[in-house]
Length: 338
Image 1 (cartoon, rainbow, N blue to C red):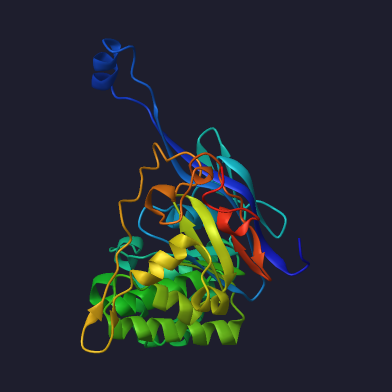
Image 2 (image 1 turned 120 degrees about the vertical axis):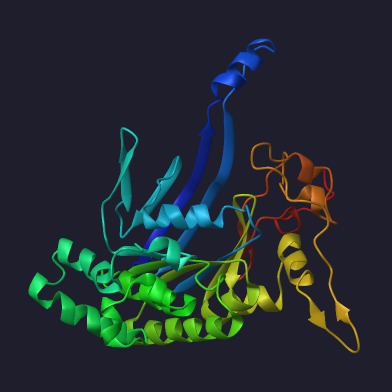
């Protein structure tokens, strides 16, 4: 691990198990028994984030990127593997209860309205955490909140307003202020602009860039939007069905993607050419995480898939300098090799 590594994930996996309900158990008794359903949300992810770096996580809906973000932020814990923030855990689980070990990792959610208490003023919401954890004394909390609101581009007098009195973009600024109030070393942003209008998206993204420059923020930026990730990230991890299939700098990913899935993602982005729009959607449907395909999980949709791809899971290996890909085309073999 490098000396400046802030976050380190090694073999991190997350499984969700749904046990059959009474009706399913009764019906299953006639078919040999109903078994629990296991969803493989995240599979053996290796990833590191250095201090001051922004790493983008990209993939289709259901690829596990939000689950990964929730593990990093301490909302849930890995089923397997090691997730370390400065060498220690973010959260621990004991008898089914999850407790955060550190407040230095904070999350900004996709829907700010759902993550804000509608019955509390935004000033109380922002100031509660710092008071509870001794970041600021109670007598200074109001001044602290007003400074944070100004820092994210809101009028300090808005502290007494309720969440419904703000627009979507303003609520996301409040959510950013609430996260910054805890003086975090790492931010996890889960689709932070997906629910906003395009013009408001640009404002929030520019705010994030300004705050990053002034505060030296480190962040994990989860998004399905390739354009947004390119704008804010230093490195990009591409996820497919719970696995990281490609990891490289923004420049390398966007100029020369190596994994067939990454290439297909770029091909699926609508482009306006000479007189007509070009749009090439990825063929097929993303498989179920309950029963993923054997071997490379992308092989049912991959134009380069061969016999080896159907039986052997490719490892995430360096295919070029600083550029890692989990594909048999780049690990010394070929997709069609047996």
